[in-house]
Amino acid sequence: MSSHDRLVVDYTLLESSKSNLREIKKVLGNIDDHHDDIRDIWGHDSIAGKMDEFVTNWDNYRRELKGNVENLGKQVEGALKSFHKQDLDLKNATEKKEKNGGK
Image 1 (cartoon, rainbow, N blue to C red):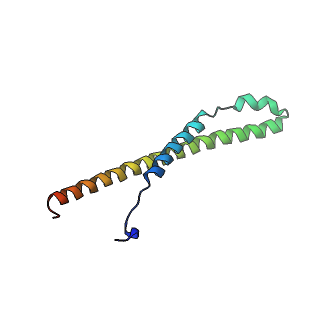
Image 2: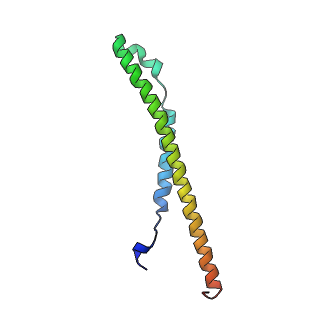
Image 3: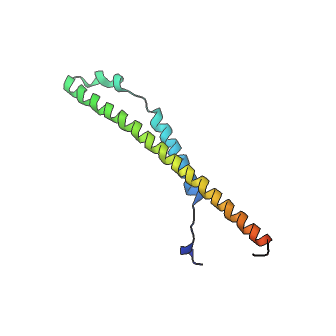
């Protein structure tokens, strides 16, 4: 059996991806909404209006991005659980077969 016939799962990469996604979600969730805090610093109403629009869009996109990161984290966690279960099932099947004399 060649290495091309095997599925190799990098658990370390999946675990670190899960951890990194959790941290990204946390950072995105902890970014304060400064919408009202910065309105006065822009001065002119037309500039303040455009910056207000920008900040509102950023807040919306940040919430959407946070949701996407959360969903991706759940998918990575699901993949990890599935691969661990498959590994355990294969180990148990192999041990059972060995116990029965290879039959």
